[in-house]
Length: 82
Image (cartoon, rainbow, N blue to C red):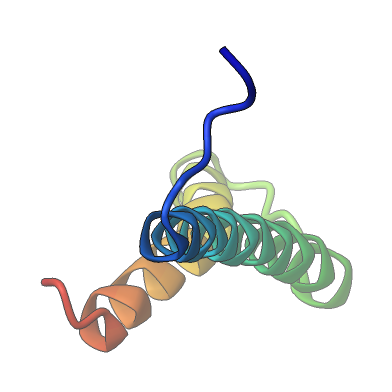
């Protein structure tokens, strides 16, 4: 009733699985940071809200959805699982 000893192969598999899960999480956090940073930079550099009613809605919608959608499309193209 001492400590449970795992074979070396099980221990290395556990560490490999843990590292792959962590790398996926880090990649997701990096993508969130790039998306938010890109949106804030775009807003600071190019946002000038028009006063006309329909065009201000379309411009603001494109400003907030455009960078996220473009990064999503890029990741779909680069992902080997899709």
